[in-house]
Image (cartoon, rainbow, N blue to C red):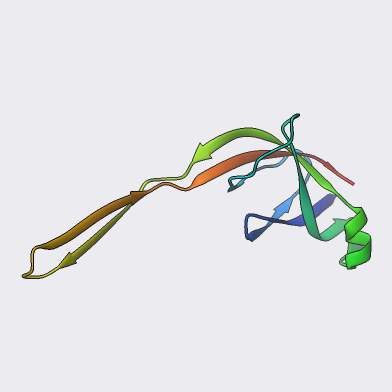
Length: 102
């Protein structure tokens, strides 16, 4: 089984062909494809972690859709002063489907 550990959005994810993963917002090219940088490549018993070999390897994914993360509510409160501050935040995410490792 072939899989790769790729760097995407400040995190590392384990992916194989056909996997769907959610990462921080990434803009694809005109065809909706994204190239991800592999950190480690496993092909059966062969494990590749050499930087020169990995530079020639590409992991291609297609953008399925842009998503938003769950709503996070931030509330700051100070007792006896009447200070209340409320904020909300939703992360912008991209859903990717891995199409090729090679």
